[in-house]
Image 1: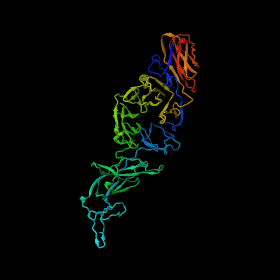
Image 2: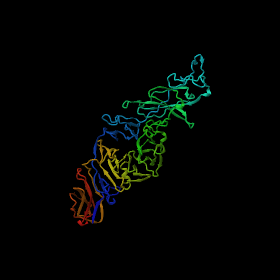
Image 3: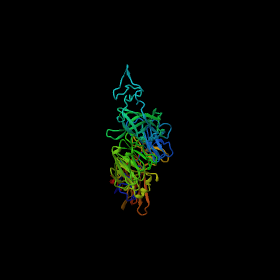
Length: 608
């Protein structure tokens, strides 16, 4: 009779030592799972200090790490040919921000050194709007003579054929003043927006009251004087780093070919100018504004956003910027990371806990039911409510691995694959064992197709294999205040709770974590005596402990052997027992533990 320990699966703590299914362990600490051998993770390496004593969030920028003392999310703005490496930043209870490469990494840190408001303030209302007859719209003061003969202009022809006042308009009233019915009379409204020093467009101001303009043929005979208010607080009027200045862009309503009214471009003036006189002919107005319905992202203005500011920002698919607050899911205008039109909003019945991109889709996790959002443009997003009512327990308890989303609830670790939900942890952990981890505080991340579940309450990190649902649960020496994925390599970094040092997981080339593995207890109906053992490994020595419970007293008897070759060795046991188990431990962090199998037998012929 023999026992062969191979595969080295993880644990299933919901079962006691004897009930654990064959192949599973009662201890699997700091061990990997994918190769079917017993091997440890490499030691983490330091990436330097975080710059804070209480770091809760990190983001790797170009050369430096951004860090925050509160839960914060940051993503690169999905812009084509972005020379300034804009990063959009969001966190609960604060206004969304943006940083860029000209000063975000300046100074000694913590970084970003400088961050700006993401939103461009809405322009205040015009101070006043006044109309008058345009300066150029008047009759000639004296008739013209050719020698002694008075020359009458042809009916309807202007008495002047040159630009008399240098304004580029030949618009002097005809010699015979037109009758009222000959004028085109239109009621128009004006609006304006800011173009800040970065070229970002604000939303349009409120429209003015309607004013009447009169046009004759191709000339606007009315001068409309617009008076602007003081610049709204928070507008970036100038950027000395780029030597750029903001502008005011003016629009006026016009009648489109369809017969509907729409704004069209009138002029662009300096952002600090206070007045502008408009005499533009309607036919000379230019394009309609892109930003007519643009607004900023949800911020701390509770009158506008009673559900609070944007808590998290993410990238859906390749280039769709998405965020959420308590009830709203919002999307940025493509190629305009600062504009979040109301028409793109999705309102949810339940409170949104967090969001997670999954390929081209977005999973929205709420206090009630998960949703899957799908679409290729913000104005065509479809929302599907999943059938299983599984609330998300933690805003940090979500990650994505191989296209599937993993999230924490009060009942376990759940997986959403396409539109189906499954409980990943229920086969290994009891409800009580899961609740003891405090699901409301759990933090999830991933690395090498593994899901890392960190419990701050117990200072434990559990590891689930996303590609092998039967691999069991493993524990890990990793106590993190926050996780962060490295964009370029998808490596895992974290901030150590005790040292506040930023570490890169599994990155050392010459040192490994201390691995420990213990098998289930094998129970035999009749007492068995195992006399010899054998260990096959890639390298030696290997520390192996064989143990049994005395058949009469129940006392545990153990023998630990430092195995230095693949040859079998004798066990100094002279008793039979019903319960046997094996434990394997690393003996040095300077050499990796790589064990293929461990066998117990009664004679050498029984070895495989």
